[in-house]
Image (cartoon, one colour):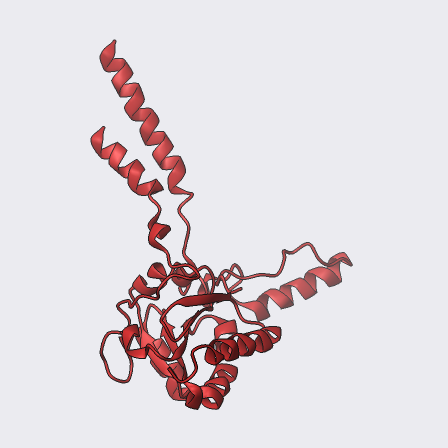
Length: 75
Length: 166
């Protein structure tokens, strides 16, 4: 019985630990790599812009493709 | 079990407990002065008003602040004002390359280890610590926008007016 309880507490701790690992923050001065161009969701803006233009022409609608903002942590 | 508890402790332990705040005495940190290749020693600058700036080449507002800071420094250097700009680029060569392209007159230090921003608990990029003639952090300015120029200038002039000539 004690062994089962001990195992259960160990597993619970492991699960809590795994869940909290996602809460680790990136400090403002550590965002150099995140600010690199190849970290963009869309690494080729010209290509994305062309695709958006074609899409808007075909669908007669625009927007809904995300918001502004980067990941460099500036300001 | 002990290892798991240790890991939990490390996960939640707060490294910013010793962070510097306003009215604290400024401390030196292991940044290397670019010109002299010696560790940054803020004691050496006692008697001067220091603008300790944390910047990086990947930070557009940092770049934007540099021409203004350079002109402010050159205007007030005779009155005992100096700027020490600590680059926190992971690759020191990025900062050097940038500075070769856009030279500035104030002092540059490089800390690619992240120890200095950790010591000062930098909360945004750029961050500036206004240090008075006695070495006390008097004001912390986060970020840089066009509208900040007047405030930065005013605060520097205020600090320069204190204990003038001492």
